[in-house]
Image (cartoon, rainbow, N blue to C red; front, side, top):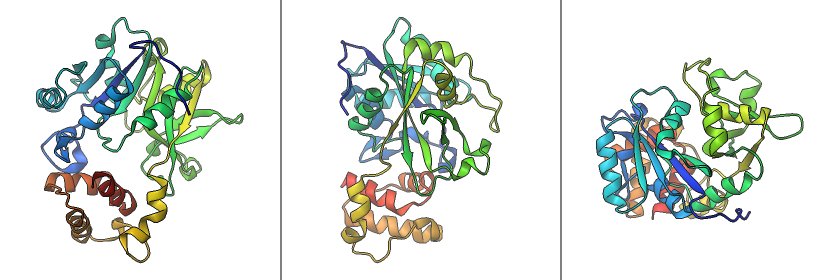
Length: 300
């Protein structure tokens, strides 16, 4: 799908990089953990820049000064702006924190997570190109095991109606396999006007960015851009290329055995994974072998 022609600086980006990374059980900010010698946040910021986003606003929080210094060192001269989310009140609040840095900007705003090292420009183009006349477009993917993700509920006419976070989902909604991928493109005027309507009446008592989908669907429209969770050729060919029997999930192994498998496969590819990165991969992706082996092959 081709994206619409753009005038100069018609798109800006917000990268959410304020989290602590609690599940990683590390004192270091999640986005500072390195993959191939670069911090995690480097990758989504770079993809946004490659798309032509100007400026790219990075929302920082935990270890804010170090995150900013690290990204500026890796991307000297890039049109980066940094804002601090002093309280972790949810993703919608994080985006709202970026508003002063985009004062006067009236184009499209791309919103990305800071911990997505495998993000591609093609995926960004798919999301921005899908928006059309809708106020908001967002990436979705279909997973065999959607546990932990927000489910995409469609209206009778077929368009997306809302995203329901797992902790707020009904048993029926939890059977939905189309999930929110956490990547958005919104008209700036719609974004700032609508964020003020987002509440925190949910299980987490947080301001969810996903609420924008329902608010857009009620009026100016929301569009879902379906993207693959992993490279399809990789997924289909995984068994052959690894030379293993049935593909199994690392989540079924004790943690130390899962760690040993991942270490062996990274060593075989000549990729060094620090203990911090290993902890991140095993916690963030629930020891999903298909995904982790795909990650290693892309880094190889």
